[in-house]
Length: 97
Image (cartoon, rainbow, N blue to C red):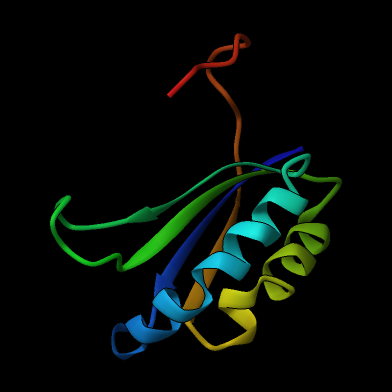
């Protein structure tokens, strides 16, 4: 199944993002079979990230939740909240972004 995860970061926790970025990216690389696309979300390109979005392939929501909660960003307290949504692709062919 495919899922979209929307993260909201704690605004006062930007230092966590900077400090834990290498560990977070290593974690994503380790789980690239499940986390298909990941990236930060911003109001505008020059602004600091306010959250993130992942596209995840997993058996169920509990597997997605386990991925999220083992991420260094989550463990270190960057995330204020997250939503896991089922996603139905409109096109069968993969898109390169």
